Image (cartoon, rainbow, N blue to C red; front, top):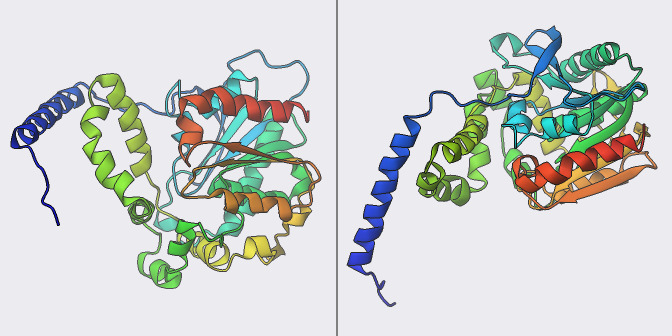
Length: 356
C-alpha cells in the first residue's frame, strides 16, 4: 500500500486559511442578535390547548367570487416555519402571491399534560375543529387541504374519515407505503421498542428524533456540514440563511407519547395505512373513501420519504382525478431552493384554480 503524498507546505496553508475563516465566522456571528423566521404577516383565527390556527394576510387582491380556503397541515415532528423561513424562501408567500387564501395549523409544543393525546385527538378533534373554524372564517362549506410530510399522512386519514369537508387534497412529501425497500427511516423505526420508549420517556424528546434523522446521512449532516460552516458564515446574509435552517432543524417539539406510539406501531412498523387496516377513534380509515381530486407532490431525491413511499397513494385511493408532481430536490429542498420558489407555488395554485 502506497503512502499518502502529502505536501507539508500546502497543508500548512490550508490550515491557516481554515483558521482565518473560523475567525471571520466568529466575527460574523457577533453581528447577529436574532434569527428571524416566520415573517409573513398572519392573524390568529382559532386556538385550543397548544394549537393555533392562523390565516395569512393576503398579498394580492382576492378574487370577487368565494374562494375555497387552503388549510396547511404540517407534521407534528417539526415546526411549520420551514415553509416560511424568509421572504425569498417561503412556500406560504408563494401561495399568497398566487392569490390563494392560506390558513395554517401550528401544533405548538406538547408538554407532560399532553402525554395521552393520541391520533384520534389530533385528527378527529384538532384537525376537524380547525377545518370547521377555517370554513366558518372564510365563509366556505369546504376547505382545500395541503398536508406536508407526516401532516400529509394525517390529512389522508382526515379526508378518508370526513370526506364531505374536503374539496381538494394536496399531499407533499407524504409517506403512504411505509415498507418500501428504500425507506431508511422506516427500517430504523421498525427496530424501535416503542412501548419501552413511551413508557420510559412519556413524551418522546425532540432531540432524540433529531439524532435519528441525522443518523440517516451522517457524512452530509455531520462532517460535511461542519467542515463547510466557515463558508456558510462568511458574511451576515449567508450566515442568516444558514442559521435560519439550523434553527428549524433543532427546534423540534417533543412528541405526545400515545400519538407517537400509535404512529410508529400502526404506520411504520405494521404498515396499516396502505393495507386499509388503520382505525382512528374506532373508525376504519379507508383511503378508498377519498374520491375528491388529489395532487401528490414528491421530491425525487428525498431520503426521508422516498418517491416509492409517496407514489403508492395512486393505487389505494378512490379518486378518478389523481395527479403526481415530481420535483427534483430533497425533502427540504422542495420547500427552500430557489427553483422551488419559482415552480412549486404556481404548480399547486394552478391545480387548485382548475378545480374551483
